[in-house]
Image 1 (cartoon, rainbow, N blue to C red):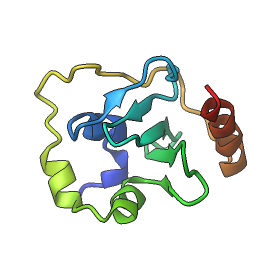
Image 2 (cartoon, one colour):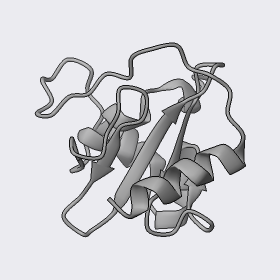
Image 3 (spheres, rainbow, N blue to C red):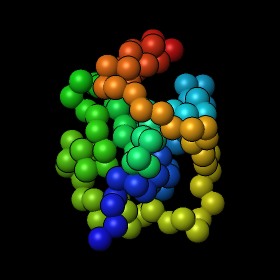
Image 4 (cartoon, rainbow, N blue to C red):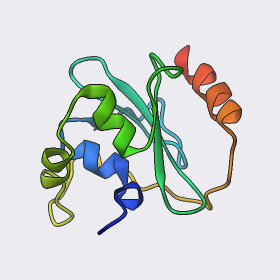
Length: 117
């Protein structure tokens, strides 16, 4: 079975109605938004896994793709089914640079610095 945490979460979300918020994104941390006001920051871990944090409710809404679907009561199979690596995604964003290990507190600090932008 494939490790779902290794699939680029930002690309999955782009295929499911989210778009890149270029004004808040960096090369290492894309920020995505949707029409319902959801704002998500994505981070790639050194082990190749992807994590997210909700910029509006980080304390209660962060983690990997499993946490993402659980917190939104979504069907992970539907979310993944919509992910197509062969389609051109408007606003595609590639995480560049060398991922580094950061602690939950460091990600939280980064979150609070973006929250006010």
